[in-house]
Image (cartoon, rainbow, N blue to C red; front, side, top):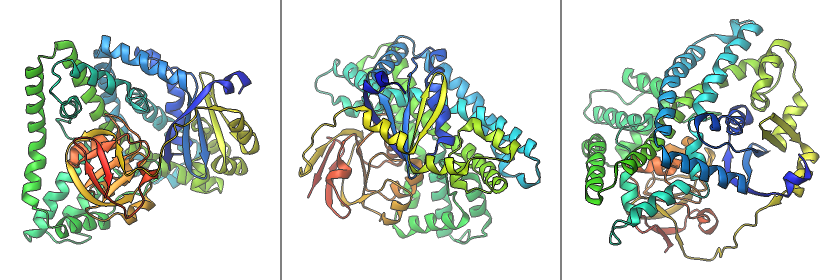
Length: 493
């Protein structure tokens, strides 16, 4: 990296856990040249930092803002760009799904190195292409929420008496289920059958085994684990023990999409939104849906990738953790040659930067990476008063709740979650959905209208406030808080 590049103002876009370079490098690389081929805007440089398994994503501030602005202008002018992307996404998705299951159900140990390399080479482009079609929603959302601000400003001009934030939440509520919603409904239906004595709540029960296999990959993300029959039994038991009116919840879930669509049509009629912006609201809602739908299926692809990497690790005499720190393009040659630099892979995990531009990707490790970080012109963080008792954010789902705070950022943190607590997170991820289902409310530091927390909370009907910036710093486990998600306020009490 040259000095001129380091002098530009850099910002941290997102912090991730358990998202290694083998899974994230392809979309970083695609962002530098592939978005423009879709009629959107490329982002010239990516610089993720890997440190002991955690990842921080750094970008040049102006590049990110300009790319987001150009992308927004493109889809406002022609919302059909998003439609076209989703047609392509829906076309590639079944190919990935079928190929992933084929890998998962295969005995890879019987394959030659050449055969194993070819299987990997066929999986990689399917995964990469599917990820590419989700990138625009990320670019438009974090951290400047350009699309959300545009839509809010558009709504505000109609009637000063309406709450544009709540109207926007209504207009972006999904009107068809993603996989997580389907799984949630079917889990309640299984709980109903258990209560009625139609099936046994036990491992080995045919319907429970089928449910576990069908949805096992939903919490996998990049590193797992998957759900097992034991997990399904536990989830059903929690539903029953919570004392929920199971039939009413099933009815609510079945009716929610019809009710959401009816409410959206009413807003379109009442506000007399023009056809172009109706289209824009619809494709924004589709961005929300596709972000969930395609990501859930991509987790199936990552499950298949993990099986390949475990076989690769055995043959190369390295750990699965080391195998996850290959660059994707390094894997085939490592398999075919039977050789790799294990020390280099360790250094990448401990502390490294992955510099990505249109020419490719390159790791900078150890002391050299620390030197580069010391020379980077990082944007100054806004000074905040961490002694405040009240925070404001953006409404994702209106409603109110009180409860004890549980900070949940990782899979390990989920063990702390108790039903009825308020889940507070830097930014929720699919691996912690089981904890989110127990929450009386959800509060995040980061995120916009199409973030994971907004999607899941709308599906579950849980009050949610996003974008508070500092909730995980102000609140601690056990703090009692009151969440007024309708006003976007979280208050310590």
